[in-house]
Image (tube, rainbow, N blue to C red; front, side, top):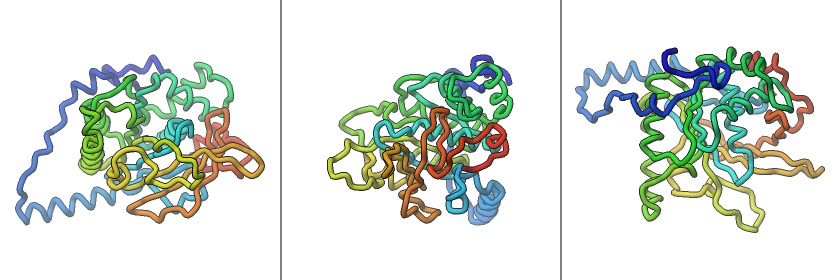
Length: 310
């Protein structure tokens, strides 16, 4: 695997900042296309999309036929503070990697080793920290399907673009996670709305250019005191953050009538699928699995390997 370092995460593929900055994508220059050539390119473009088909699903039977990740799209994952956004998106990436989708994760607030430990606990179903054998087993299962970017701290916009170019162009990943928008440093606080609009628009262009699915984690505005149900417009930042992406998921803290705390997941907006009238009620277990609230059992390692759904 060349210079990629597997040792630190027990077969985890770690992407270094040097690899990302050294990668030189082919320039996407604007050009005029003759009609005859355009006809051929158009046919090849749609054939490629058909060949790719679905890029995977959410790990829940209840919505398996109602939503799938498609190439050339962005999914925004928006939620309130401490609603387990990073935990859930990591669990989603694990599910996709176990189902042979190539996934890249950039978590700018967390070392790659911590990201992998969370996945190992979800994979094994263990409540306590996993051992080396557990990590080796997961590493072998997701070898060549899971990559984690070794970058902690605020990232400049160009760093994020380089990360996407490298993961899509060199690694040929299907899914690219950016966690989170809050950790991206824009040029000026006075122009942040416009900078965010340009950023999400460019991400969409990259998703379409490489036929990948990009996942962006972001946050709600400061909550009001009305106790109203959340919607996509509670997302902090420019309106383009919810208007440009193909899908907008909302992640909220919930509590049942019995006083059980959980997480609500809602598909609030989508260009390709019908939005959900009600969110999925999920329980966040101390083994880092997100189970449907009706499910009293954790998924076993065998279940995870089979790609079973809660």
